Length: 168
Image (cartoon, rainbow, N blue to C red; front, side, top):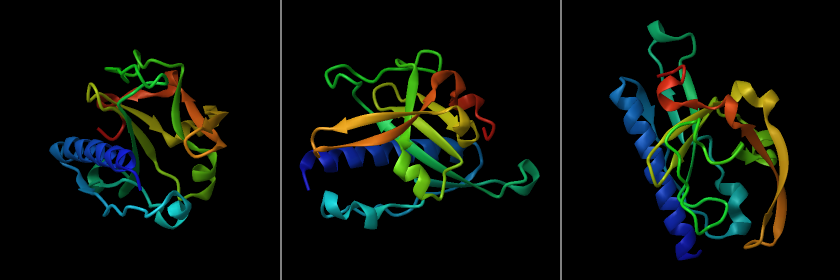
């Protein structure tokens, strides 16, 4: 396992904790599952999880008791030299927002919402899984690992600012 992978994983965990802290400040119960580091890329399937956060909602606030949240964060844009900057859904730098691989979505269980975090600005935007019908498929090449895969992306007009998310 490379130091680069470990540092990306740690940065991702920091983003998860930041989302959890904001939700906890709003009075929600939040559970952050333990993080397990896979020994190698080949063993990734055995280390897939059931979501980054579980948010527990008081009965009087919603009909759902629990919301599964997947957190995605980045520090660099498509060109690894440029920072991944946005402050809200409107100024997200691309027309589509990466959600996950199609394989991960098809494998399930599905998150209720994806929270996208800029590691540079700390801004958070949300993609509700109910917008799935509007997502687009694409192909992404992973040159570091030597393969390509199908991705799912949400048009940015379906994203909401964290403060406008229905749960908040």
